[in-house]
Length: 171
Image (cartoon, rainbow, N blue to C red):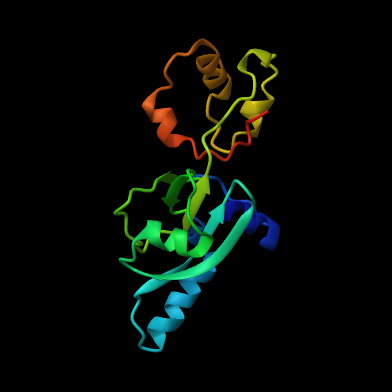
């Protein structure tokens, strides 16, 4: 989050609804700086560096992938076969969706991820303390998900798609 970075680096607070450029601040990620440098040298913007990560074992690699490269192939090339793990891609770990076999690398792709489905070791052990919900980086209704797992009720599709399966809520 660029607002956090601005506070830490510049010591300035700007409101969450305010764009940094409205305050004369330009925040660029390294990929953007790299692309600008290539364009300035006359090289086309034809691919990007991105993070390939396996959330099941903590491995991660930075890889370069030309636009149009099959994302599933790029992930497998970087980290090996999925071996039954779920695959995700997105413009950041907090904004991913299921990776489909024919998804290409695009200018918006920042990460490729292996993960496992969320597994609650014992849904009946839930004490309602809310720790799982506080740990969820997406602030999903984890307590409700645990209750659904406990009673075998379906989880709404919207929540299934939003969950990035980081397993921060697992216990």
